[in-house]
Image (cartoon, rainbow, N blue to C red; front, side):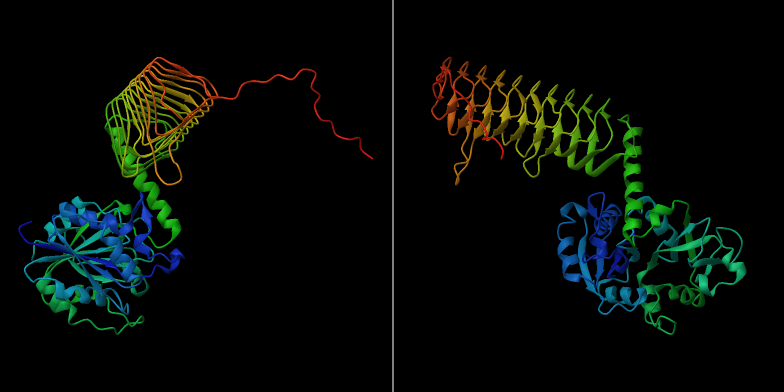
Length: 472
C-alpha cells in the first residue's frame, strides 16, 4: 500500500485461564511464541513499524521480542506499557504517542497466531486510508460473540454497530457475522475517536469497539471484510485452545508439503516446529518431529518416530526409525545415500559423507566421516576425523575429553577398528591400520600396522567357582 502501515499488537493480558506463570503470548505454537507468529505476519505486510502493547509480564515479553525480528523484518519494533489494564481502547491509547497521522493503524492480537497476511492485506484495502475496516467471521453458532449489524441485508452494506451477545435482540442474535477483534483504521481518525471513549459500562473498561459508533456519528464509512476460515481469527485462552490450534497449524503445514509432492504416512502425526524444505519423492513416516531448519534432498526416506533438528540430509539418504538428529548451532550434514539408525544419535558438528552407515545406538558428535565409513553398532565418535571406508567396531569409543580440554582423533582411510576399543585422543590411526578388539590406544598407529593393546590372556586349569554356603 502507498499509505504507511503501523501495526499495534495487543499483548498486555495475563491469560489467567492458561494457568501458567509464563505470559500468554509467549506460549508456543509450532515451536515459536504466539506473539512471534503475529510479528512475522506484520513483517510480511511491509509495515512501517509494530508497536507491542505490554502489561502483564512486560519485561519478559519485551525481552523475548528481541529475538523475534531481524534486519530482514523491514520495520522497527517498539513497545508501549499498559499498566493497569483498563480495556482494549485503553490499550490502544497507550500506543498513540508512537503513531503518525499519515498512516493506517492495523490492530492485531498477540494471542491470535494464524491470521494470514493476504487476509490482512484485503482488510487494509477495504480501509483504503479513509474507512474503518473490521475483519469479521461468519459462524454457524455465534453464541457469545458480538454481532455485526449492517445497514442492509447485503454483505457489502456498511456496518452500523457491533452489538454484544448479551445486549442483542432476538433478531440480532440471528446474525451469524461476528467481529474478530482485528481492525484497520486511519490513524488521524483513530486518535480523535479514542479521545471520546469512556468507561460507562458494566466492566468499567474502555472498549475499542466503541469507535464504531463514533465513526457512524461522524459519517465515516465502516466496512467489513468477512472470512469463513475460523482458525485465522481464533485466539488462545487456555491449554485446550492452544492444542487445538497446534493441530490446525500442523495440518496446514502437512497439506502444503503434500501438495508439493511429499508423501506423509499420516498428516495427523507430523510436526514441524521451524522450517522444513523437501526435494522430490521424499517419504516421511508417522510421529516425526522437525525443528529449527531442516532440508531433505530428493528421495530421502525418514522412518517413524524420528526427531530431526537443524540438519541437511542429502539425496537418497535413509533415516531409520527412532533416530535423533540435533545440529543446534553447528548443524548436522548427512551425505547422499547415507544410512542412519535405527536408534542413532547425531549431535552438533556431525558431518557424514556419501554412503556412510551409522547404525543402532551409535552417537556421533563434532566428527567427520568420509565416503563409505561405517559405525554400525553401539559406538561413540566424538571430535574425530574418519577416512573413507573405515570400519568402526561395536562398543568402541573415542576418549576425546581429558577433564579440561577436548582432543581430536584421526582415523585415516581403510582403517579397521575392532570391537570394544578405546582411542584416547589426541591420537592418529594411520591409513590401512588395524586395531585389535578390546585395545586401549594411547599412541599413534603407523599406516598398515596391527596394534593390540590389552592384557595377556591367562588360563587357570581346574579352577572352581565360589559357591554359596548352604542355608540354615
